[in-house]
Length: 87
Length: 146
Image 1 (spheres, one colour):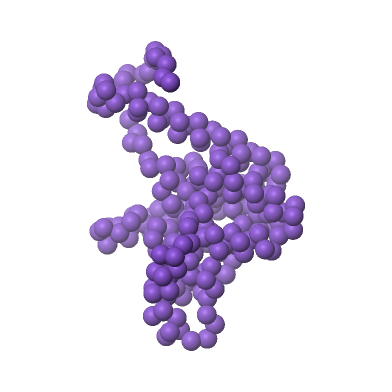
Image 2: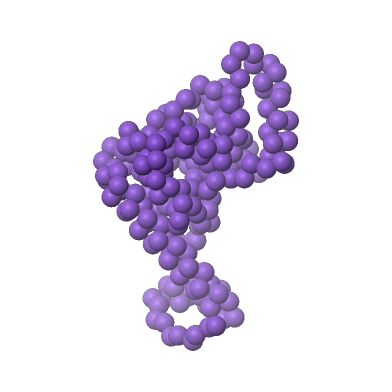
């Protein structure tokens, strides 16, 4: 089942959707909304995790961010030095 | 407009240490990493052997806490990769040259599968025992010790 709805979007999003093509807009918006809904559900579940364990302290979050930044930099350098490798 | 990122690009691989440390409330780096990974539109890969190892070392209440991180909606962010016949063959073939020359203590299957996942995804590894993974992956591979 599908339902026709009308939405208003900012100019930059409208310009992007024009590039997507009129026939694919509904699928594109559906995918985007499903992706965001799943992410919201994940964040809700993560809040439940933190309710059980207590919220991570800033040093935990900073350590996590720092390591992910290191991994991203390493992946980028690896892709540059070895084209074709997954990044 | 910002380009859409692939929703499930694996950025990290966990061994059992961050999972057990989180479930037994010793270290909250695992949920911190899950939160950061979600913000970046990435995912974390875990071997099913690692997951079994983690549950083996937890009591019932702690296992419930681990369920919360590895099930439901978060299962899409913390992906348990399959360990099937093809994986077993590939793992054995890939590992044989490394292990035949290594001598001494042999890494567990869970460690070998973790290294294989890290190689497949070119992902950083979070571990409580970096030495065997360092040996398998090389000195420059990004490892976070918990």
